[in-house]
Length: 401
Ligand code: SR1
Ligand code: MG
Image (cartoon, rainbow, N blue to C red; front, top):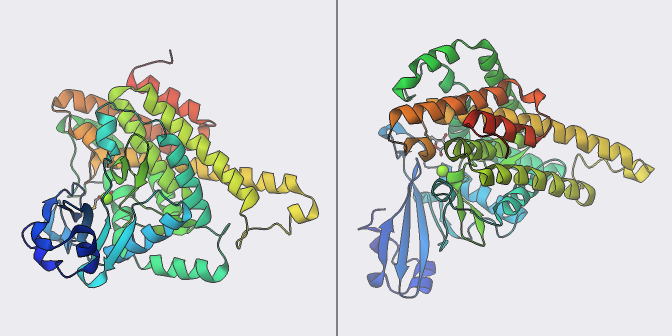
């Protein structure tokens, strides 16, 4: 699809004409700002829709990095499932055409991408509640705690085929930042830091241990790329988009990706509000996960017959605490690695990229790398998220007021 061809190409799609009227009156703009896909907003006087199409290559790189269009298939199936597990938190999907790798969905308006809004210093009252609930509900309900054997194994098999995108995560997240991979780049003033980091055995061991967790721990259906560019916000609403990296993996991966991005933003503007959001997301996640543990533990790992049915509620609570501790450790580790890969790898973030003064950018990136290392290597030393906020404040140059 192109801006010029879209109206003719989709003129016979009843969904489009029902909602927008005849194609001659459609206005089309391309608004995709992600790394991979085309995203069009199609408007008429009657309404608007979003059309998203996967290209056969990585958009930001060009045709030299081919990529299967099948990712649209996995995105569609992941969005459908995640949307059912936390209703109202994904855009409404209206049409999927596998042969065109194309989805038509609700146009979210007046929503904007969260990352840009945070960089602009805006705050959103319901953000932490929405995202904490989203994480608990999707991660719990996609796991063995909730799903029955047949459904769970079928989904595991379905998303196991998303090999190309999980391969990208395996490389870009866990290994590329720690060797001289040709697709990496970094701010030149960080040369010495990068050399040190590639010789940092403890950090590289943490990266490989966490990669092992990511590859081996098929705990739940992950969004797989839950950074602040995969979230759209308005004053009242929060939506999660772009689930094409969906794969079964450890729960802490989605939580850590998100918190790592919030802590990077906090490194740049030292915002107490962002730190408080990160804390509230984790607290909400724990509360909601605990509620689901008590009320919806009906899957393969339900184990009520071992605990509640025998009057052993304490055993169930202790099992929950063990699981939450493990998710917490994973969360910190993955957050720490996310903070490395967004500074040293292929895919950077606007929080740092938007800083034109190179020495300022390098200095902030260095702080984020120091925080990321503490989280990845020392993940078992943090007992509370308040301790992580203190670490961020200490490195980002502000102490608790
Ligand atoms: C080649 S894709 C690079 C990155 O963009 C996506 O948003 C994911 O974060 C991926 O790692
Ligand atoms: Mg994306």
